[in-house]
Length: 238
Ligand SMILES: [Zn+2]
Image (cartoon, rainbow, N blue to C red; front, side):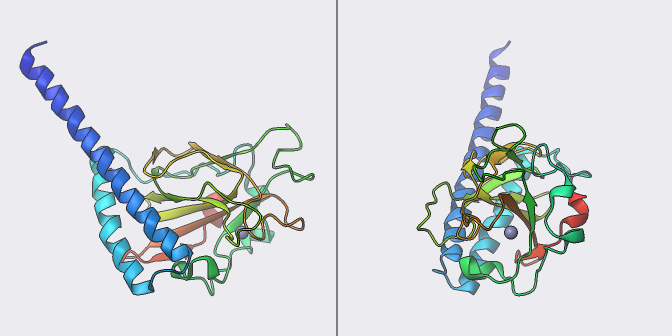
């Protein structure tokens, strides 16, 4: 190998590393804004302005790293070993978008999501049939932009241990809540189908005995102003 070629390879590696670092930095920024929104500690307009600063830059940085990624045609079901039969409600009626606003944080109304239930009669978060924890999988490729790994029974946080994944190709944020354990980190680049967590019972209501163990799965589509708006994923999950 001649010296010029080695320099060229090193330069490419350095560029890739810098881009990965930029994705991470932006994801960490998103996570901070999301935490402020969650805890109702930031004004709505100010929070939206921050998303408008962060997300386009993140999209550009991601596309440089993953230029060949295309919008997926087929979804990976978000719980391994389960199907759309395990979605709560009949024909997806568990999805109630009215009253929901992302910027209301932990105080939001509505239920713009689908709850997907696992077989867990004794509520130990393990599948009754296998005795094992159940994997939560990412339906999309993208970047982990927010998460919470800590939760205890005294917390009023409704999502418990949650994950937000930003998918530039779907122009959306995907939210996975009530996890038992979060297995990814902020800034991590995810492929569709990757295991990101295990199904759990964390969260103010999800922890209560009357609540069967489930994953709360939500898609927020970003409009042209990067305002996250709920979208019904029932057909995609089918
Ligand atoms: Zn739910």
